[in-house]
Length: 151
Image (cartoon, rainbow, N blue to C red; front, side, top):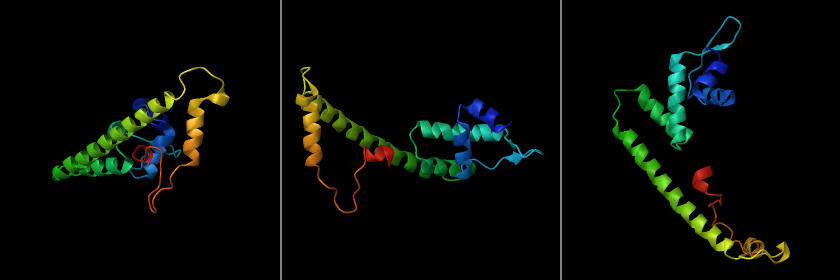
């Protein structure tokens, strides 16, 4: 099958498939006489595995580790358990961060309960004040919007 067919079969954008190939997650496909990529059932299965890992919010590095163990069925599964335990910890941390963010947004929303003009909007005033007094991060500690989500 060609890359467009693989994309349709796995509901994956063509650009993503090419990216996974460049990252070494998908093996390079064979080429036809006209130099088209030719994918087989093993590519479909592997791409579905990658997509499932990503749907569990696993990083590409985590998926890469899982693929390593999948490709080595005689390996000890304990390392897979450890990887998943660590990922669960990251998810738990993100949930705590998101709950703090939700609380902050609700508090911010409470600053402006009436429909006054924007010049007197409590939300805008609060954001402006916070941006002027925002603390700088400690050296070596970058600030990121939900860092563990996007980092």
